[in-house]
Image (tube, rainbow, N blue to C red; front, side, top):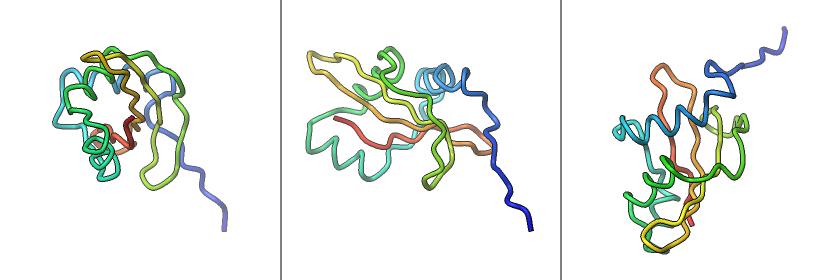
Length: 106
């Protein structure tokens, strides 16, 4: 039996722009995970701040292929929004319809 390697459908050089595009045009495809929701409450970060960071923030890390749970391109974005520095770790998941998971925020 051979080991199958799962390759991404979306090329690495398109992952960042795809995340930004989803955040700006298809917000229904952004899923904020429970961990990120807890951090939002704890740190008083709004959904609007997350979207602004994904759309206009500086890419700090990534895209990096991540196979933990849902496979996809993981990126870290940061931006000052509403006077606060917001950092968002998001993953463009490799599904039939591309969607973005917000993993954590601070």
